[in-house]
Image 1: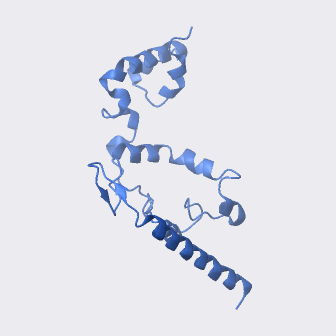
Image 2: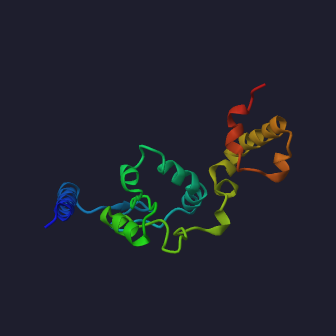
Image 3: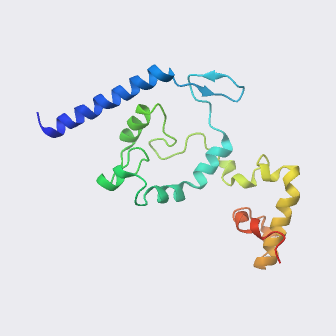
Length: 171
């Protein structure tokens, strides 16, 4: 038996012991559902959460590849946890070992993505579109027009709204 095979066997044994310890200490994993119930299966993902995760996935993937973020990726060039340079099967197995399911299917489609919610800030159910926030949101967009000299309000550009939040009320 080679040293590599022995090391892999010890690693699998350690993983099994960790899982057994977690089950002994905490029991089966339970998920809180929108109605307040604790069930053994996860609830369906919130549509705005899925849209936000889709929108920011490029930036998140870039950040995950920075030095010091994922030691496995630095050592081997592969991260099964974050699905970077890994096969779908490897990623799915790693997620299953953690009791999770992948957000993206084998074809690369995000699970639960509603194409009508590609820009989460434009959705009427977003908190910034709520009546109590609409006045502030409008003020931010008006200030954006003043600062940029662009027709931001006419474009209804929510994508760069965060740039102007600190600018409201400043000279």
